[in-house]
Length: 463
Image (cartoon, rainbow, N blue to C red; front, side, top):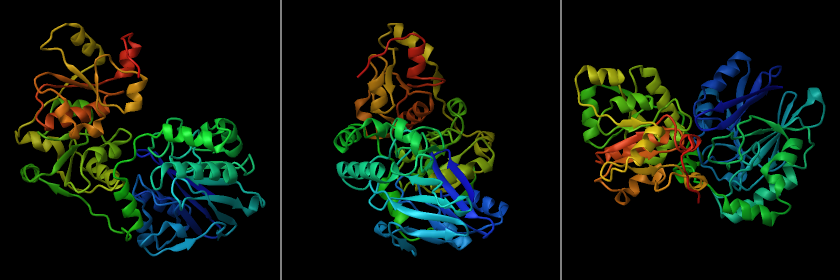
């Protein structure tokens, strides 16, 4: 069996290429938007991608199934309950795809979505017993999928409990578990591990699911612990259910003067450089979203409209801008253009720039302790509510960065505002939002956050 896991580090998604080299054919399960990894693997191992299998209609990222169908000529297979609009071959529980000596069996595991399916793998060269299960968005490593993205959350939780206890954990303990998401994904909870695989036996003993003796206790915990939903769920699901997307529009390079015209017409500029570079100098109105940090595309999707015209600007190497455009396309956003030559080109023409003051948590403490009423900043904590409850700086205000644009009236404009998070990335984006909205005294707390504050012996409140 040819088996390869492909991880999308920005989104925490896992997809798979499975085949039989002797048969010269392979299948891709849950393809990401960027299909180049599968094309490289298929060429390297001399197999043709003949099939695309979807565990479900994804809600957090756009599938590459249309591109694989168009470029590789693969047929797309998805559960009949998915109700998709594109050409496909529907299957039901128990359907088996045979690729040489490899068998892929569909195991219905509803809950995350009604059509959700796991895929049980057998390698006939090793015997008749299953060797692995691709669990998609059902059983993760250390955790289970969230139940609220398609149906009533309680109903979804009950279905997840039945799917995992009745079907997945009933498999032999040695069966390998290969999930659809790793740590960092918004489709799981806080117990979601960064490990890429496990076994049924290990998860039966150590998964968060193991602590619940019955459906009632699991459902109660699942509903109480629901985190923030992925951005633009309905839009992303509609893209994945709708007509196939086979073409990828390449962003157009723009000269600085053209960028200014687009910005004046309402375009949104996404600065993908490191926070330190952005803070030192950036184009007025730009949003700070470091593309080299995990979760880049999801962060952007939380703060821009799905129909916004996006322009990407980097340091000066156009390849980085094109890669960022791919990451944004993976969450349903479209980048129409980028600044050719990046900030180097902008500054070489002497065009206006702005800066954002960056300080570290220790300096924030000094300013708060100074006792200066007029100069003491308001601390704006832009982490999620669950993080805030676990510990926050006394006197700080909680507004998650994704909600900031809708809650600006809660913030004073006659006082410095210091944005803080856990590491400096979300606070940098929040600071750029405030600056874009006309707040003049904005301070970005970087190189650490609330955790650093606490480790340095500073006080925190809980709850």
